[in-house]
Image 1: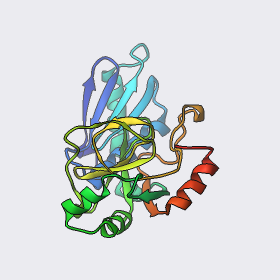
Image 2 (image 1 turned 45 degrees about the vertical axis):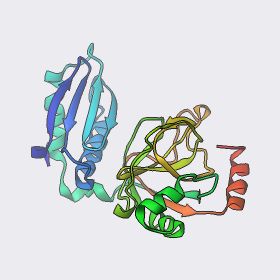
Image 3 (image 1 turned 180 degrees about the vertical axis):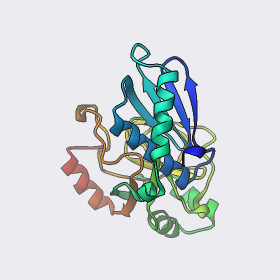
Image 4 (image 1 turned 90 degrees about the vertical axis):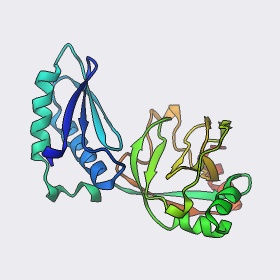
Length: 235
């Protein structure tokens, strides 16, 4: 596994471990395995790790360490990774209830037309598989999900919306994801979850992490309102 990882200094406080060059589950699994190994090792000077699709950014305090010291330590950790760890199988399965269409998913009709499917077929296809969280980004807690049914690939909006409600589930190109906060955005919105995925008061805690899997579960507008009320208000 170590032969496929390259280590590149980034600025004066980071080393980037490049594990591949594609959005691929096996590549992302290497990223997550190395991330866990770095966190467990508690290397001196390391302040943060940021896993992405195909690379891991390891941030450090330049007053405590430097690339010449940190890189060999990272190479050693990479060399200790084994296939037996099966990192692709790691991670929790998190169910996310979604109300599709109507005011909750104003672009569902467009996605259906683009795919040559009915709206119900789009919903069934979107809920019909589990999605790996390849990375979190763009917004706090925004999960970039891999494994979208190819029939549902569709272009982003030509003109992004200035405000998308928190909890909105969208499709952009070959990916699907969830907006955890009110935000501008250009993805096609097909539904919304009543779950509060991120609030500043939570201290940044999320119901999922990179490497976990998400399963979308369709719910009715009535169920949406009940769950929303239990969450303490609108998302």
